[in-house]
Length: 114
Length: 115
Image 1 (cartoon, chains in turn purple, orange):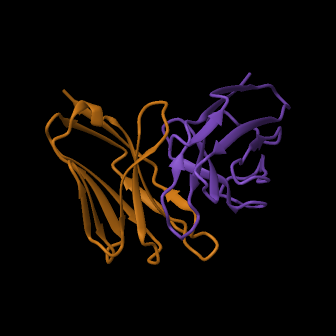
Image 2 (image 1 turned 45 degrees about the vertical axis):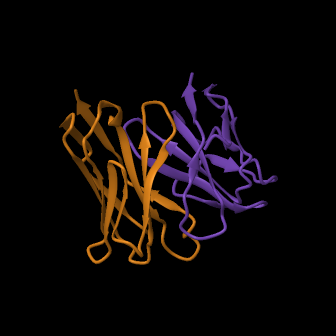
């Protein structure tokens, strides 16, 4: 999991502002994921991408957008349409060669609303 | 889609005692069940996983058991130590052809090991 990095560690968003969270991996993994974690709760899937230039909505995609232009990178944009964005955001990746495989997580970005 | 239930939500044990966390899942096609440990403010880290061709897997003080008939799997930690204190998450595949790359996570168990 040391091969997955997220930045920044903390991010502050003003009302009506879009912000982008970075996720990079050098593990040569095909699949990447974004999760949201609220205090004392589990992980909920926002978006996932099985391969470059392709991605699918997860369970809570509203108010978020992603892109997958490069294999190594899967940035997440939190748009102004997301009314309650304060949470811990975790990016993960997996090799992508088979179904039902291990996911490895980045260190996370904590997003706070000013 | 898959649904994963995890119990208990909190667990407090005396150092040296055992801890057991149980998860149930709904999709009978699932065959991969990982367990993650998350320390406060840190990333979840895989501690053990099991696939449906085995019923039990051990790694030192940690073991996972799987009952496919009953659709549940459990994490067992023996001889608990204070550094085992963390939140533990189970997960199961998302189910369905398009969702098989997804993992659905349980709601987590906060384990406290009292010295």
